[in-house]
Structures are given as structure tokens and as C-alpha cells.
Length: 277
Image (cartoon, rainbow, N blue to C red):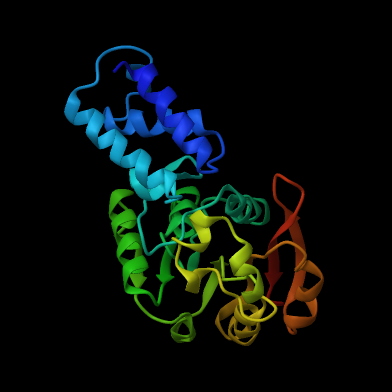
């Protein structure tokens, strides 16, 4: 079958399973099978072996396994990250945290000491280290599988001389102090987990999603931790969920609310706090 025929057939299967943009996703899956060459999905030949692999990928995607888990890759901040089962997939909304860090710390030569609390794939830490070439950092991750992905990505981006991944609860960060703290904590209220898309609900790690009864459990813990580990004048930038912005300022006593930056959809997304000097 020609590439276009394979894509057309796969698109019908994916659409029937509720996958959005089924033709685009089918083309991405075929490009992955063909070695990442999207041009070859427009013409050329597909071997029987390649067709069999492609069809197995389509079956997995039709079962609503995330595309990033199937291909093993996800782009974040124009960087390539390795991802797979057991680690939260980086989202474009989280790039708002990096944008805010650059806005609040305009001198990229600043020798920051930074932390990423609940680093997951390491996306936030690695993106920040890329933008601040004299910075060093630690990613704290309590889940062994996620920590393994973060270490892979740290090596992939050749940053092991400037950062490390600690397989530990983020409360162990209390042994250090930091100029910049980034975090994308779990913030989905427990009652809303079942309403999430199947890709998220059934495949991504629940511990990275479930924020407790009201979605704020992790922030309560961070409110106790951050004043202890932020250096005077230091910044903490954290992702928050839709509608959670009003609850934030009362939680973080002793820290100055700089602002809550919106994401590309205009939703308040990046909570920026500063420790007074």
C-alpha cells in the first residue's frame, strides 16, 4: 500500500476512536516508522515490515495511548525530550514558566542555582539550563521511573556537568537554597481525574496529576517549603491549574506575589513568587 493509502486507512481508525486530528497523527506515526522523514510519507514505498510496525502503532494510538509514548519523543521549548510510560508528557502550557523566568531574570549570564521540584522528564530544568548557560541545578523526583527519564534527557542535552537528578521527595531540597525554583506540581482535583482525556487519565502517572480533594495539596506543601529554600531575592515559578489563581496568594505567606502570567490561551498559568531581601 502507498503511504497515502496507509495514512487514509489509519485516519479512519483513529477518527472512529475519538483521536483529534487523525490524519495528522497518522502521518506523524508513519514518519516515525520511516525514520522521522515526513517527506517520505508523501511518496515512495513502505516495506511490509514497516507497514506491520505502522499498523501496530495505529492500534496503540486507537486505544488512546499518547502519541508521545508511541514515538518516545516530545518537543518542549524547541528541544527534544525522551518520554515514555511512567512520566508526565511536557505540555506547551508549561513553557509559560520558562518565559516568565526569562522576563524576571533578563541577564542570562546570571550564575543561578536552580531547582525543579517534581522534575518528571526534566523538561523545565533542562529548558532553563539551556537559557541560562552559567546556571546549575537539581531536579527532585520521587518516582524512580520518571527520574530515569529525566537522567536520560539530561545526558541527551549534555548537561550532566551542570545538573543532577535526585530520586527523592522534594522536601529533601531543604538541604539547599536556590535562586530560582521551578515546579509543575499535581493540581487536578481528585474528582476531576475521571473527566480527563483517556490519553491522560489511563496512561500518564496519576501521582503527577492528582492534587487532592481541591487540587491544592501540593501547593500547601510548597507554601511550607519555599520560604526555607529560597534565597533572599530568589524566585519561585510554579504552574497552576485553571481557576486556581485566586487561591494562591493566601497560601504563600511570607513570599511576595510578583504576578500570575497567562499562557497562550489567556489562562492564568505561571505563579511567580519572590522572597523579600
